[in-house]
Length: 115
Length: 115
Image (cartoon, rainbow over all chains, first blue to last red; front, side):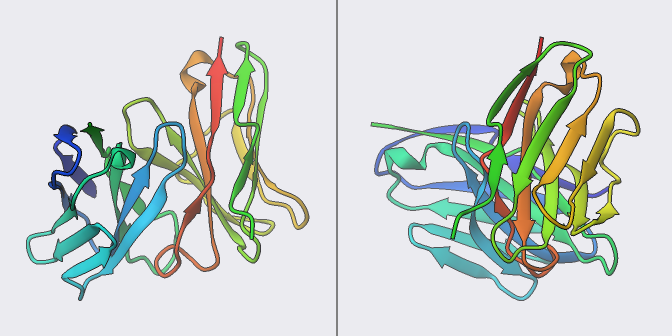
């Protein structure tokens, strides 16, 4: 069964600290993996897109890694800010030739950054 | 270039009424996706449409739910005879190409409350 599991479910850190969010997936055939940030009451916003051949990709203070062998990805946030408080969603895209309804969403990690 | 526009942002209906949610994709995007998100849950795929065509509706409940994306105008998700279990946030996303290759942009969501 195609699944995306994220951990931890929730996380509280102090402003300025770093943190790492995990994503494990059992999805095949794999096309690419994406991390989204979803602020409370808002729609998800894309942070990174990683293909099978990419190991790491950065977007400002966000760095995503991908190990396609172990089917694991992580999102590292450096020098956290209060505005980083949000849910971070890992999404794995199946490589279908037909149907395009092929995004598998994790439940997200809820990050709270405290002053 | 405006983003994905959804309206209404909030909708309250009584059991048995109809709910219509609208989504205008980003300019130049011909692919539209609808997702449902329950509190503390991940986004669940409902339907994928291109102009005038339903490509994949495997995530849509068999009864009461329908979607369209006419040649002119927004995509519409229609829920007939709503029940309390339909209360959720409904997100629309659009892309220029299919999701395997294309960036997916989300709207801010429509929050349906069924009394």
